[in-house]
Image (cartoon, rainbow, N blue to C red):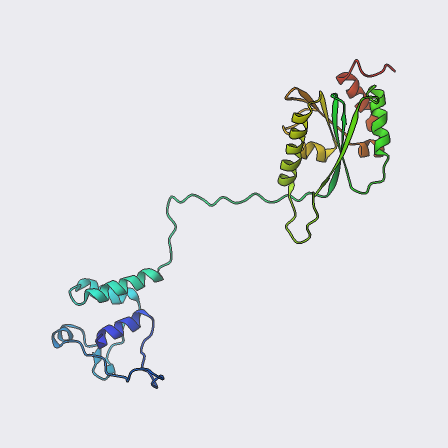
Amino acid sequence: MNELQRAEYLSVLGVPSYVPRFVLPLAPSPRQAELPPAEEAAGAQPALSASGLSGNPLPHSAEQIIAPVLQSPERNPRVLDEISALTNETKLPQEAPNAAPVALAPPRQSVKPFVLNCWRIGEELLAVDSHEPGAALPLEALFNNMLRALQWHQRPRQQERLQWPLTENRFGPAEDASQARDTFSSWLEASYTRMPVKSIWLMGREAQDFCSPVPLENPLVDWQGARLISMPSLSQLLREPALKRPLWQQLRSYYPTDTRAE
């Protein structure tokens, strides 16, 4: 490497001048860089001398270094290739003009803990009632009164209790509404497939939002031979007794042969 190439490399690297002040251990002894050939120095502008830098300062940008080299590529092709590689590494990446926009994940919707009480009444009914955990209300007694009014109280009964979240994990991220919907809608479909029933009661907001396998556009929706019926939860009926009368009228319209006359 001669002195002109050394100066060009230093300028591309952003170093105006470099002279070692002492010899490092095990380093080779310093030596004077070779001067460019006489014919090459004669055609070049006087920017360097044998003792170092003199006259006009060297350019400080890669474009100013590459421009004269591009005009005279026969000077040193190896220097041209190496300087071009260094320039390409320092360029910022540009986005493609037709690049597709990056899809953003939908925001997570947190869900408060809740409990689902599930009753299966023979081949007639699968009832899913939602309520807050720890609420001390006579839910079982109210549900038994509804079965007695429909004359279903003597049919075989199975009961199940589900809760959300399924497990307490204080160190992991909170599970959101989409995960609750996938979990309980899959559970309801599997439970209905295993033992079909004529009606499915979805009682309360959580039961309707997370258990229904189809959108509930109306209080009564047909799904795979069963009737999905939306109604208030047992907790709502106990806290707001005025909701009992419209619910009873609704049940009489759905089950005219099973409801007793007033």
